[in-house]
Length: 512
Image 1: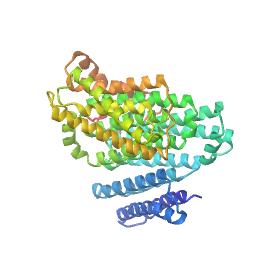
Image 2 (image 1 turned 60 degrees about the horizontal axis):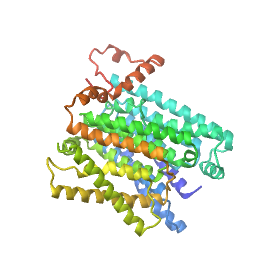
Image 3 (image 1 turned 90 degrees about the vertical axis):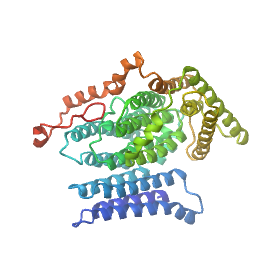
Image 4 (image 1 turned 45 degrees about the vertical axis):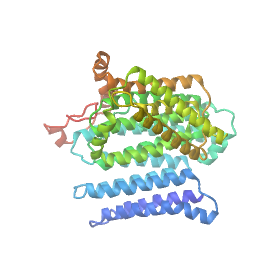
C-alpha cells in the first residue's frame, strides 16, 4: 500500500470515526464535526512532509492537491454550518450526513480499486440525498431530490456495467493494473470501448449535463452549506473519475466524442441561460452546469491538465461563492452591467488584440522553454475568454484599453505558469484535429457573441423572441420531469399533500 493510499484512507477513517462518535448522546455533535474536519486538515497538510521525510522524494502533486482541497472545503463548510444551522431541529442529522459524505469523498480519491471507487461514489450520492431533503416538509425539496435520485441511480447502473465489462476483459479492477494493461494495447476491444462510453455516460449523468440538469438548478430549498458542498465538491467527482481513467478514455473515440459534444452543448446553452437569470444562487447553479460541461469537454479533448486545473479552481470558487452569496449581489453589479460600448467593430478588434497578446506571449514562452506546447483548442478558449477584458466604457479610452491589455497579458501568463506546473503530472493527450478545432471555435464564439447580444442588443426583436426559451432553460427539464413522474411518481407525505400553500418550483429554479 502506497503512502498516499494509506494517508487517504486514514483521512477517510477520521471522518468515519467522527460520523460514529457524533451518534453518542449529548450536544457535542458540532464539536465532533469541527474537530474531525480540523484534524483531517492537519493530516492533509502534514502528509507531503511525512512522505518526503520517509522516502526522500517529493510526493505526487495530484494526491497532495486533492487531499488538501477536500480537507479545506470540509473544514470551511463544517465551520460555516455550525453557525448557520445551530438550533435547527435536525442539525444532528446534518452532522451525520456531511461527515459521511466527506468520508466517502476521501475514500474515493484515495482508493486504487474501481469497485471501492464505485461504492464510495454511490455513498456520496446517497448521503447527499439526505442533505438535499434537510427540510423534509418542503415539497420542492422532495421533488428535486426525487429527480436527482433517479439520475444518480442511472449513472451508477452505467458505472456498474462498465466495471463488469472491464473485469471480464482484464480480470482485474485495480486501477494501476488496468492502466498498465491498457498501455500495452494498440486499440481497445469492443467491450472496453463500451466500458469507456459507459464511464463517460456515468459522469454526464452525475455532473448535471443537459437535459438531465434540472436537479442542480432547483436545489435552493436545501441549506446554503449543502449548496456549497455539492457545487464545490460532490458534482466535480465525475471529472475526477474520468481523469483517473484517462488512459481508458483517451483510447476510446466514442467516449471522447460523447464528452466533447454533450459537454460543449451544455456549456454553451447553460452559459446562455445563466446570462438571463436574476437570482444569485440560481445563476451560480447554472454556472456550475456550464462549468461541468466545460470540464467534460476538456477531458474529451484530451486536455487533462486543463481539466484538473479547472476542477481545483471551480471547487474553490464555487465554495466561496455560495458561502458568500450575500456579497455576490454587489459583485454582480460590477461584472454584469458592462458598458454599452460593445459595437461590432470593437468586438472584432478585441478578438484580434486578444489573439495577438496570447499568441505573442506563447511564442516568448516557447522561445524560453522550447518544450512548452499548448493545444490549439486552449488558445481558442483563451482568446474568447480574455477578449472581454478589452471592452471599455462608453467610448474609446487609451488608458482603459491599455489596462485591458495588461489584464489579458497577466491572466494569460498566469495560466501558462499553472499549465506548466499541472502538465508535469497530468500530461495532455490532445491531438491536432481540424473538425474538433472548428467545433470548439464555434462553441466559444457563440458564448462570446451572446454576451454582446445580452449587453448591447437586449431590446432587439430576435432576443425578445429567444429570451423566454433561454430563460426557461429551453424547457428541457419540463419534459424530463414529466417523464420521471410517469415512470416513478413521487409519494408525498400527508402533510405535504394537504398543504394548500406550497412553494411551486419551476424549471427556472426560482420559487413562486
